[in-house]
Image (cartoon, rainbow, N blue to C red; front, side, top):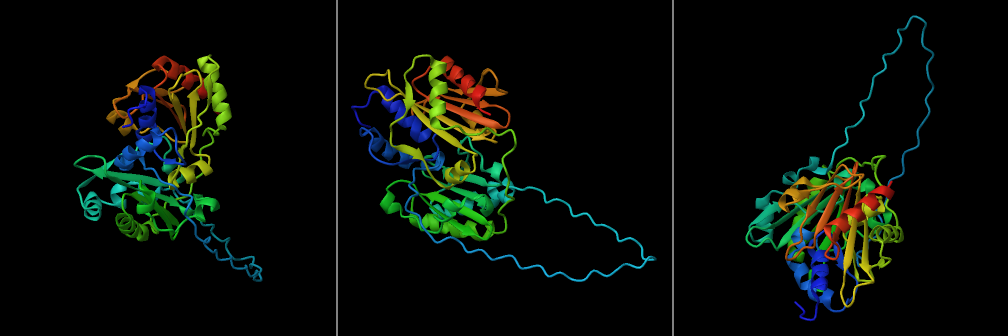
Length: 367
């Protein structure tokens, strides 16, 4: 790693690559730190959801078939002696997630291992926004030997995919060009499927294996619950965080990383995911980045909290919260559950008490 980086810069870079920023993609250079960090990003793609640019995808929109015109038929006059017809009740369809929310039905570990060429095991990705709130599903597998190499599959009902995203489907991945994690997404019947991985061949094989079955297991499109937060713009988040700290030194981060990928694009467009990166102007020669992630309609992943050793604590206005201490490649995280919503505050530049104050202030204004 670049020896010129300060400890805060290293922590910030690691946090953005491995921590809460699960679907992060580069847009340019950032003091060389993010360039050095891209090497680490390759290693953690399977766990973190990957680093991928989606702007090169393009394909014509899928044509739709017009509804047939109804033909009116004469209605016979019933005879007085005829019994009243019995009204039959059509039951309302039960909402279902893609593949019934079961990643084993998407792909079993043996199939993934055969395609990738090494033994793969299922894992949890740890994003705060759950595709199930829209009827979708996200699954991930990592190499059993080193936990660095990984692949992921995301499935959504086509109806929840906005036109702006649907127009980008169908272009094969180009892992050699990206140099990092790459992704291919396509439509199969009423399902939209995305596969992320390390090579073009494994992505193509995984997509072909999942796609045909996904067409029959696309799930039921859903709307967000009424209690889901409305995602504010980043300027509002900056204002709230700055007031909570009381130092007048917070601004939108001027870095060059941003959320990307099918899961982020669909969920953010539907108001089911939000992200804002901030930094601290009072710091001298350090990158003190604060990542704020919102999951309207989503609940915290218990498996992630258990795996990362989350410690319960109290956050005013929230039902539950957990603090996860920073490690070598992750910054400290505060995960908050408020109603049917999840908040993640992640930074190496605040104390635990400061992170709690920030979380309480955000929960207080989100509606």
